Image (cartoon, rainbow, N blue to C red; front, side):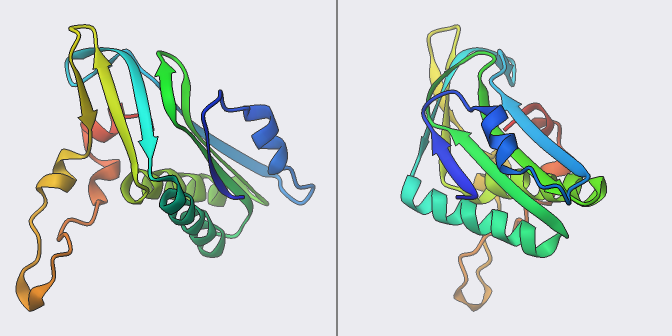
Length: 171
């Protein structure tokens, strides 16, 4: 399985071994950790929920797209669900390939697409005692096309590499 969820700590060593290939000279991984602040709020823990049946299908499509789009050998994404403490590993992506460049590109593609397409919800719990579901405000506020009856967002998520909010969000 190229994309999966776990309610236990992600076993990075085991995930990495799944990507081992003697024809691969490059390996790249991304780790998203639970941090102690977001947008000026002191965070104490997170909860992740997912519509797992749909999320696994969409996540699998994303990894398959990366394998088809980039000349890489193997790719895998593992995402936590449930309650996570500060410092916990929330999401892990790994890619192996003959060369490092395509491994970097494929890894970035996978994490960016997972963040934007997979139905995973993050609830932050704050030191103040409050909590809130976190989403991409630009995505929620994006104007929708009306010509031709389409309700698809006009917004294309190109902001994922350019905005401070996205750089602060590790997963």
